[in-house]
Image (tube, rainbow, N blue to C red):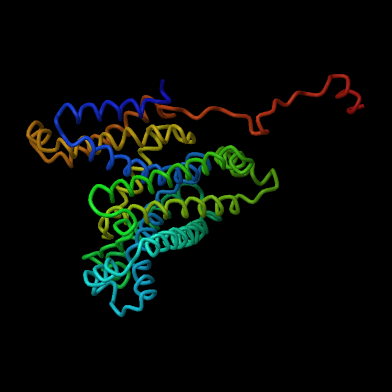
Length: 371
């Protein structure tokens, strides 16, 4: 039953929205995109922190730069390929309008594939760079260092205008519009792309967590020195893990920017893409990918229900429900840590020797060897 608690709560929320006479179709489509984006980000965090024990409090770094690739790089490449001389940042409205008129569906598909490839490369590179302090720092100091790394993306994007327009932000290239059309079809297309990417990421992370690489990550989580005893370099393990996590989360940032249709650095604060993914992981169950899925559904339901019924809730509580959301999520985090520290769907204990039982040698054989 616990394995489906997220889906059950989601189904109940759909029924509540329908009973209240709100737009159920819009709720279904937008929540699926939210679930997919947060699922990709939190699965990448679960690989690093939940399975590998790497306290990455800077998840927003790679998510933000993935979005910056959509707003600051893909559009420029599209203009260059079309032979247009617009400045994508300072002539943003004219450049996006020109791209919308000249791009075909094939061009848009090529831009989407190129954006994913660039985001993977940039995210993996940033993950490798962020892993460098892990060679010398212990878990506590590493967590603080990565927390500072996360703010780097926010301040660079906000103060360096040529990247994504600084405080004004930029519109993303009209890729979804050219692939699927406008209105509801654009939203359905975003659902298909985001949900498909989330499914692929889930299968990838699940495969990694059950592989020998996943088992060595769990050993690293329990005691990094044991990894050295087994002949592996813990710094090498952390670098690979953070590169994979960075690449995956950067793709989520790209998809989020294309779905939102714009990139604004103020949208990439640590509460949205570091605190919330940590909350989801703790709520669902650290180290368990299925638990993360349940945690994402519960988080998105709470977030969206507060948004849909914000006027009714605001009138009832007497203040802005945005602050109620912060209080609810903070209280939820403390409640889960106090009552269910392993999460709603705890990680199952598994042997690290490929799932095989290790039987001790016969007593007589042991004695003869000793003799």
